[in-house]
Length: 242
Image (cartoon, rainbow, N blue to C red; front, side, top):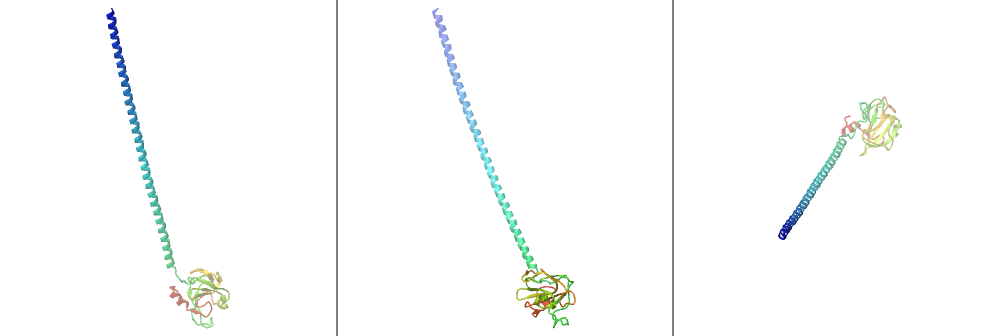
């Protein structure tokens, strides 16, 4: 009986030992599995972070490239605008210069006229000979400065040259040249006024010693009566087709 009890105890002890070994082995396996899983998670997280960083870097690079492209486009647009502005300014300047060059230096004192009494013509209307050129036009016709200058005489009594001229204007030009306009119905400028070529200075009329509506026109070497030269010859030398 004693041998049976001992044998059973020995078997029970062996079974317990095996169970303990199996349990220990299972624990080791679980621990190893947990370690492997933890390492895998860390690797995955690291890979995801690297991918995010790479994507961010790529986006930053693309954004920088777009900024550079936009800056180049803005500079190109600004350069184009500046070039267009410069070209427009040069074109305007050229046009202005061409217009100035094309603008006549001297012009007829009236338009749509008929030449009547001429310079140095004899007749009972004048003390000796005619001192200017008459342009037959209706009263109220616009009279303009044949050339730019300064008004030195203006008003009635021939503007100081005598009642025979009626209302008159005298303009001083450069190089000792003066132009005179007489028998006017109305004077529209004043002494000291600067006028441009072709600017209105009066309206034609029939005042003073006049046989009918017309403009009496003179070119003088002084502002006063007695210094007249042939006005038609003078104007034609200036390119005016009188």
